Image 1 (cartoon, rainbow, N blue to C red):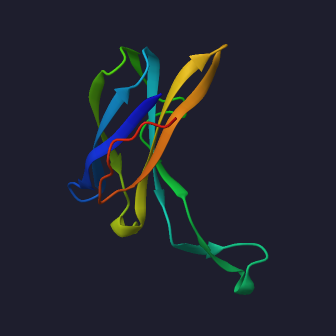
Image 2 (cartoon, rainbow, N blue to C red; image 1 turned 90 degrees about the vertical axis):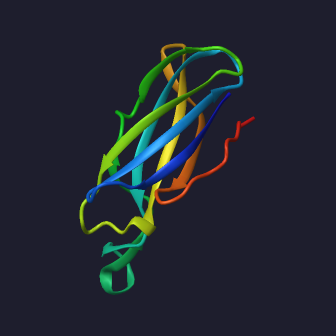
Length: 132
């Protein structure tokens, strides 16, 4: 399993979120990392919602990698690495409603398998945690 943490995420220059992510391997293997930015509390049209307006959550606003992630490469058990990401945000996004979704994957039988995933407020941080 691979653990990941955002050691720092903040609104950098106007219009972007910067994140430093630490990835640690519990087991040796070849891994990739994916990251995307989501926004909560987005009021917009929804069929069947009272008044047709609904408060949406987890709206994807920016992909920091493609869906299969960026290759980290081979990691040994206990090894950690840091990666930095910058994601563009529009003026209409509210930093307090933004979160980063970070996940690690590995290949198995020709498929990408999600090994661990964490959601972190874009203006905050979270501790390191291995998923079992």
